[in-house]
Length: 446
Image (tube, rainbow, N blue to C red; front, side):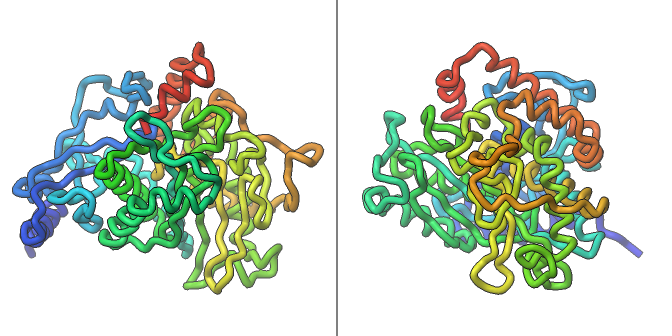
């Protein structure tokens, strides 16, 4: 019996996709991945090369696992420095013509070694392994990440100065927002909400929940699309954790719900607010690991200028029903199946694959250990004696990360060490800078 290799199967699929893309007027395909600093990197090929790229991948240096937000490079014990090469292999299931970039299509990429084995430092591969670990327990997770951004004019000033959630901002940028909505919809994304947010010039879009890896892919595509639409309007975009000193920053709130056999375990159960035991244990695992998880979900020095009380950032290690100052907000939902939990302490600088994969690992650890969910915090934790603050700086989060056996095991040695090296190096990079200088340094990097 003749068997077809995975590479040959990818080539065959790419051949069919290339014919359709040519009919649609596509000239090239861009492959995207996100590094450990949270920056999205890309490579592209002409459409004629899609089949070759799908079969053999496109070269990519492994040193990007150790690149910082300013493109300087650090080292880790398992790194090979400038030696070696990886292959970027597009996921053809997510191949999408880009509505705001005529002639281009997009696909997320997995990273492989030259011999075709998965690269242990691939963040998308990590998220996939975490999702598979959930599935092996007979469970599934639906997830989504809110995308917040500040839109600025050519001078770098916010493009509107309307009030929070204000009509003024919506009307002044109505044409722009319409084009964002159209582009996302044309790309097959199900937009739930699009509106002005709290900070000056800030907006938010929410997309329907999907599987964990798909949710991270969609976050990449949404950010790519918003930036492209903005460029066509002569506008600039920042996803940085903080755009203006003292102002509310750009969150990357992660929503997720745990399911078994089509039933949402966040409602209809015997626990508090209808939680099933498995959901309680899962969320307890997340809360237990939350200080360490911040090294992945709030990855930069600037992240901790956002993660402060009274900024709706979830600066306290607690949970509560519709409590927007708690790190973990429980959402009952207004219809069947809508109940979910929201992690508010993550921001838009996070690599979405690392953020989602690490939360799944923490939740499964809680489930396996049968951890109890602690008492609820029903009020503003800042007003309560003994409320526990989450790490208030990146060094504090890194310390917690180093102590986490759960994340060390889940990430694997190479990815764990690379993340740790990048975080330590960023702490050193910004050690002598003021808050204003940190904000300025990363404002346009994300």
